[in-house]
Length: 607
Image 1 (tube, rainbow, N blue to C red):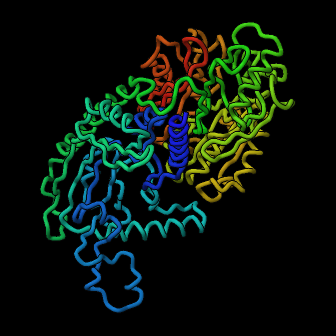
Image 2: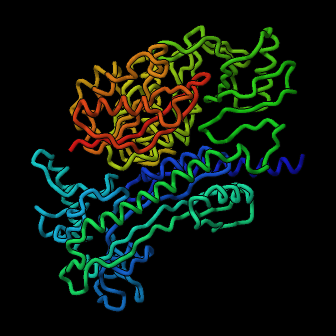
Image 3: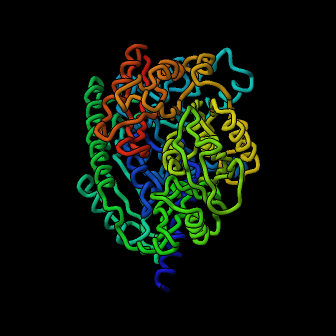
């Protein structure tokens, strides 16, 4: 028992570190995970044994300097041997220590090169030519600070134009430091994963090696859960594009399409390897190390998937093996067989005895129905703990708290990993529309972790009241990573179709659409339109290259491709004159036997 207690303490510490790491603000230039790395990060983070610490799905960029990443914060400026004694120069952060080079990269692109002539046009790198100045080169659709905000508009306010002027100056300073030769580099996939045991590290490396040969254990600290595995690809390019001399003489002029092909082919091979790795991770055994005993009851500390397991010898009857923990409430979805009131009470007391944080145990006694997908006032029976009517609790997920009325709103703690996956894809400065937001946990996660602005829409008035209470708690929540989170969240009560009809077209960078189940009229049962009316209203609201997270319901035989869902979206895009670029298709939960909830992440191309 002593060894188990020690292992359990280590497991608890690992899960707490995992929760802390995944809740941190993304400090990359885009403030989000690369789209092509989302799938593998989600697959790894869904397992108890691992969490990702950094990732890149593959990227190309142009650069000048010595190409050493550690010198990225040094500009092409004087060294400390050349600087004079002026006070301002002494405090200049761009001054390089003697012996150090500099590294300045630009036109960073995590996607394929679509316009070779524009991407390799060096004349548009001159910030003095404001009309032709093109820092992105038509590259990365992933928004990053200052990447696109370099043109002032007549209808901008004075404050907005002042901010843009500051952005222009910072961009100009960066591009004024461009010197010959200019190089192009392609960096393949790279991933760092924290593992909770040496056995888990070995299992992950075995899963990665069929796709990636460069796999290794880079950090091994003594103690539980301190093993970092690095996985990186070998599809690299590093070549000069201009000659020295300061004239930006492009030595491969006329070969832009060939360069584009070389980069894009490496992207394709790199992404194929990532997909193979995803399949390997998903086929891994459920348990790859022995850190806890299967015979013991384990309460997971991760606040996202808090379904717990209990043994069969703790009550007079066999309790359910799994239940959801929402706030201080343990919610049992069903109890098999017929039990007396005393037997149900024994089950509830056994659960509360094992977890002192649980104050109420309830059993759902009716199916979810209606657009609210809630059990109703009579749909929950409290079998242990204090009686509450309605059953309201506050739930914490990665430090963010929401209010949930379990009788009258729909909320699932098992969707926590999916909410994290979506949140990690939101870049800084995005304008997000969150439809069918419920108690707005997904919206609050986004504004708390990024500088995005979110408009949340919900029809259920009780869910809207819960969402507003959660918004008020954001103002005094120390776990919020970005200032002004509550001010960047607007919650609107109303029907989604009616609200969308009042919104301006091409005004959102991202739309979340976790639409509710429509019962027998849904598309997975061969009836209904699968939410086509919502798609027709949503897609015009997206900007060019805007992204949508569309939730649908699929029968087991439709997985993994979900062709019906894809074709439904494609037909609406064709009808509206748009193109669809699929980013990721995720299975995010089961709603019934042989019925699943899926999410299709796709990008809309309008030009």
